Image (cartoon, rainbow, N blue to C red; front, side, top):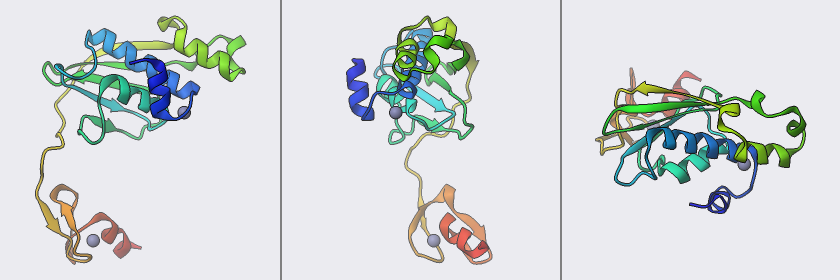
Length: 173
Ligand SMILES: [Zn+2]
Ligand SMILES: [Zn+2]
C-alpha cells in the first residue's frame, strides 16, 4: 500500500497521519508481519486521532472486524499483536524527537515524521496480550424502555429492567 492510498483513505495529508503510518509500520516490522491476511492481527489504539486511519490501512485492523480496540487515553501509542501467538509490540511516538527546525513548519514536520530515523521518534517494547473478546455474534435483548434490540453485554440491569445505555442515562438525568 502506497502512502498516497493512505492519504486518499484519510482524506488529507497531515502530521497525525504520518505519525500513525510510522507507528504502524514500526509495529509490523517488529512483528515481522505484512498486512493482516494470513496472520490475524489485533490493534489497540490509545487515541482516535488521524493516525489511526493509517494503522487501519496498514494492519487491516478495523472496528467492523472487531480487531481494532480503542482506549481513550489520549496517547500516541498503538499495540499491535498477533492473535496466533499472543505476542505483540507496543509502539510509542515521541514528538520531542522532531528537530526544532522542523517543528513549526507543518510540511517539514510531516516530512520528518514520515522519513526521519525511527529511533528518534519511536520507542517500542514487546508485550504479552490476553486475548480480548472479539466481535463474534452475541445475543440481543430488547430494551425494557425503548424496545430496541441491544447486544446483551451492553444492557444495564436496573429497577426498570434490562435497558440500553441511552435509556439508563436518561433515567439518571
Ligand atoms: Zn489528518
Ligand atoms: Zn432503550
